[in-house]
Image (cartoon, rainbow, N blue to C red):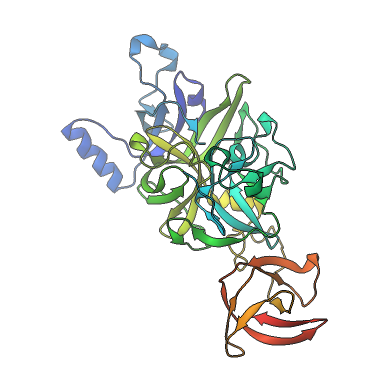
Length: 386
């Protein structure tokens, strides 16, 4: 199937159900769908007549024992409304200071610390000079973001895209640490609300949805899985990315994603299943979330573990503490041992000790927690969170 990417106009191929015109052909297609018999779907930028293409590049009617179907989708493009949101949540406008506009997919946890999840072409852009120390703005530069509205600093350069037109990538993802003191909420999407931490898979026919900077909350149907696709990052520099294991979601007339939605987290119900990074007016290209979580070793909450937990032996945080003190103006205390309301942003520690090494997260103002009194350590009174 991979060899088809070398054909004229072909920019992706994957597995799905064939669509045909004609009464009897539709009956046959419906039967194949009923028994789960899939075809190889070949996606082309433009359909051409037999006279305009070499016989050597004609799409065969069958390949690898499966029938083929050709769908015109146009050229796949990178997807680049925003407002300042504090606390920061997924689904809002955010991008590197030298860019235009993108979306932060979610706030996630890596080694117990909060990170912003988006695409490399949103948070890194190394082919355009992006480097450590650059600021990630929320909202994006095109939406009025400035250095005063920075939420993260480019620091992580993991899993750099290989854009040689040969090497196969699994995703276009960047994970960058939130700056200290930035208020955020995890497991929450702007415009959608709460979602669950446990990831899920996508299959053909599933209805998925996302919240993005440009098109807001939209849904679409999975068109094909196990897609191999090509997408240019810079034609002038010859930077061509090949991606395998992708999922295509229907995007007719840009109804699912538009430019600026890159980085959006895709959900099935309330469970994360993928991340958007490109598309056309026919399809959106989504990278499955599980391989991304495994590669970057992050989770959507502090209590769950990456899908390949056997490979990553991160310490499990079992007890969390916050300190009460005059200078912190920490909490409004309800009956002891019950619920506390955070009046100011508070740091959560792994032990009753004031040091940067023990910091694992920040509780934003307004958070309600259940806790019990632990005791006085140093000049602070400590609460143990339940």
